[in-house]
Image 1 (cartoon, rainbow, N blue to C red):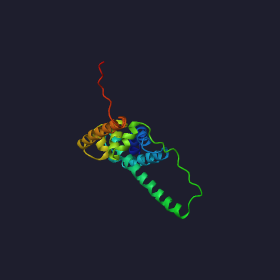
Image 2 (tube, rainbow, N blue to C red):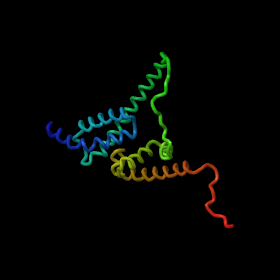
Image 3 (spheres, one colour):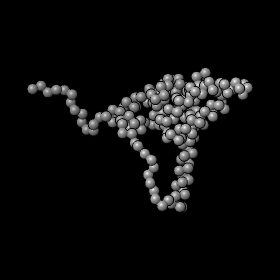
Image 4 (spheres, rainbow, N blue to C red):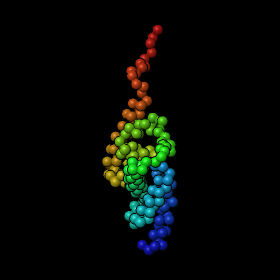
Length: 179
């Protein structure tokens, strides 16, 4: 494939990938990291243009997911280095970082109680509206495994939501007393 044909193909595909990938990443990380990972994802798509399947979005989600994992790993390494430096040369004043806003909703709490793999399956299904076959492409598993894991994850999420929404202690009787 010559350079112009590659460019034309990429320019045809990229607009359909950018916004879904931007939303995918925005739900998983901070805006600056999302932008960096989006750029890295598009670069991988460009480099591996010949490998793109007919429906490139699930494949691109998988690439974005891997790029995000690499970015998070790099961030953790930087934090470890900063922690070592802080021991040797502590900063004069420590302030807490910007908005560690914990979700106050039952759904966020229930998702947080699940294993990360289960929460990711549910996010791909609910937020990205992917089918089990598309989820399989993102996670590099079989469609059957994706369906089974998705079913189990939904059940676990339902159980977590019930636990969160039920008040502690005894349940009230739903029967009415007759006078």
